[in-house]
Image (cartoon, rainbow, N blue to C red):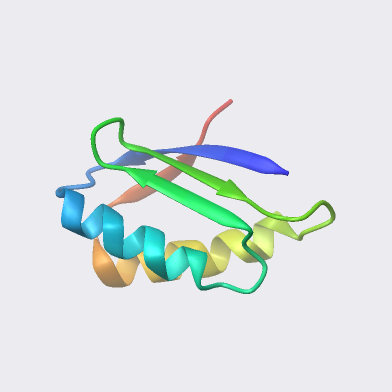
Length: 75
């Protein structure tokens, strides 16, 4: 399953890369892409993944790198 999120107040490409690498290290994540240019994050995880629990981990990782960044699910 793939989900796309908007990133609000992501300040630099270096932070985007750090966020992406940290998220990719999570065992339940197949792939992740964080784009500073488009302010978008895409996460791919196996079907059946508890995405709510996964997003709690993702938000915590992202807050360590970029405390002011907000992650908003695209509709």
